[in-house]
Amino acid sequence: MIIIAFFLFVGTFMDAIPAMILFVPVILPTANLFGMEPVHLGLIVVMTLAIGLVTPPYGLCLLLAAKIGKLSIEKSFSAVMPYILIVLVVLLFVAFLPEVAFYLPKLINPSLF
Image (cartoon, rainbow, N blue to C red; front, side, top):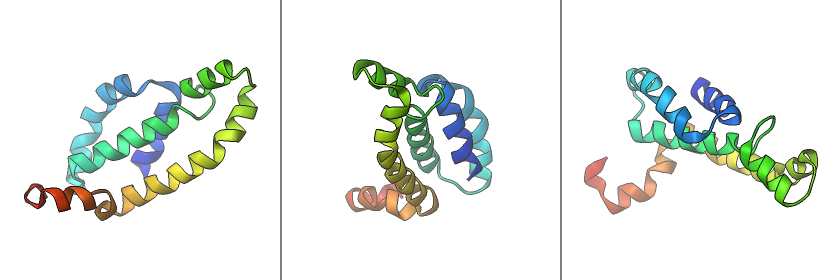
C-alpha cells in the first residue's frame, strides 16, 4: 500500500520514465524481500504513474487535455473523476490479488510462472 501511495504521489509531479529510472532500483530489492514478483511490481508502478499523470496539482495529461478542450482544470478533473475511481479499483485488484493480473499470462505460457 505504501508503494501505491508513493508512486501516485510521484506520478503527479514527475513523468513516468524518469520516475521509474530514479525510484524502481531503490524499491525493487525491498519488494523482493517481501516476496513481490518484479513483474507484479512493474504493473503496479506503471499503473500508479499513469494515474498520477491525470491527477492534480501537476498532472501533465490533465493540464494538456484542459488546454486543448479550452476548459478549466477543475471542470476537466470533475469529468475525469469517475474514470480515475474505476482505475483505482482495478489498481487495488491488481495490487492485492496478483492472480487477477497474471490470469491470462498463465493461460498463455504457464511455464513462466
